[in-house]
Length: 157
Image 1 (cartoon, rainbow, N blue to C red):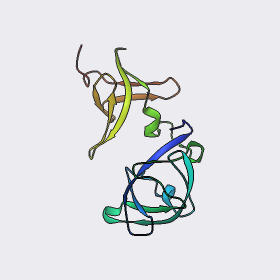
Image 2: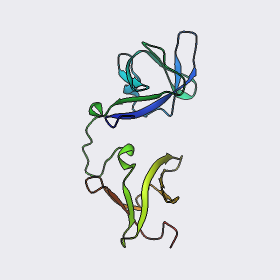
Image 3: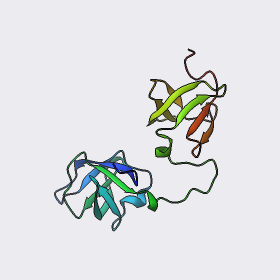
Image 4: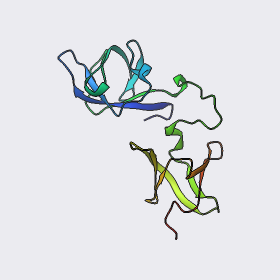
C-alpha cells in the first residue's frame, strides 16, 4: 500500500444482496465509512454510496464499484485530522520505529501494533512483545524514529 494511504479496514463478508459488505478490522473513525466518503479499495479510489451498522455494531458499506473480499480499505494520509496533543500519535506511525530500553539497549523495530482488549501491544521484529501502556512506554519520538521503554519489560539478554 502506498505510503500516502493509511489502512482503515478490509473488505469482509457480503451483507445483503445490494453489494454491501462488512468492514473487517475497521477503524474507530466512523466518518471514514460515511456515505459520500472516498476510500481506496485495493489502491484505487471508490466512493461509499451506502453506510450502516450491522451485527455487533460493525460497519456495513457499499461502494460505487465492485471490490474483492479481503481487499484493503484505506484513506489518504492527508485527510487524517491533525493531532493536537504533543503525546498523541496514530498507531500506524509506530510501525518501523526502533525500540530501545532506557539504558540504551536496542530491542528491535516495531513490526506491528496488535489490538487487545486491555491494551495494544507492540510486536517487534526481534520477537518481543511489549504492552503499549504508560508504565512500559516512556517516550515516543516520531521525529527521531524511536520508542523508549522502561527496563524490565523485555527479556534480558
